[in-house]
Image (cartoon, rainbow, N blue to C red; front, side, top):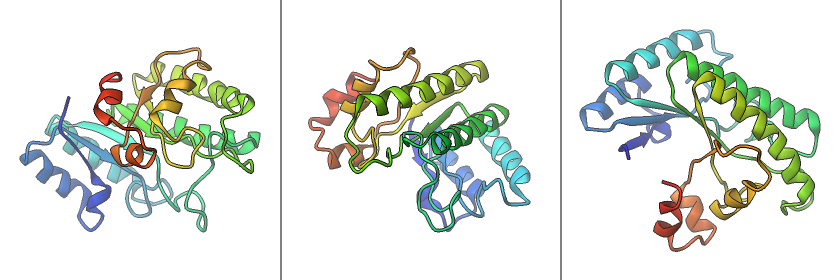
Length: 207
């Protein structure tokens, strides 16, 4: 297991400068979340930022992780972008395209892992209906296949209120998938919110 740091807590710092410091402190992995001014594809300096990020993580032999659970990046007045679990086909496809684009960028920049949340279904309740899980599984099977071809690991992060909001629901989702290659990006804070105790036993099953 590698000691890692999520740079979402360093928003007031220069990203690459902060990563340099994390490397000197002994961290071996860093997670980066795209946002306005920092790895936003709409920014004119996006390509330069990505090259600089690739250079600094490669030079320090750091594992790079792209966390796509971003806010207000795809929709100006909606904290979340298109959701993969949406019952609206166009929205689910837009979310899939977004993840696929970042998997391609991950491959180019030598990022080994891309993480994301399932999102909500758009129904009155986020109950795991069979049709919702079946549709989500179709999108996930496609994305995992693309990730495999690119040499990137894809991992789903359970998030409170989403269709897949707990590790237990991630485990249940496996019955709908045609692949065993979808990773788990477990968040201890989310696990506590979902009352998934004891944490250690559940995490140990997915090391």
